[in-house]
Length: 76
Image (cartoon, rainbow, N blue to C red; front, side, top):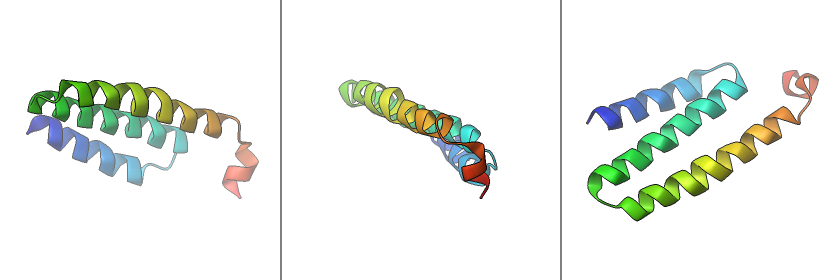
């Protein structure tokens, strides 16, 4: 219950955050919370895959995309 509430809180903070890098880091926290929920349900393989693929690859890809984009393009 605490893990689900933490994931929900992180997802709300992610959406309301003004900095895109902070949103990506909150997104990583949400995905880690989801993997913890998988662990608590007994689906260990799915939890490990969640961490390896989504947190390890997708969030890093998003952060690289943000870091390689010029700030002036992001501001409009």
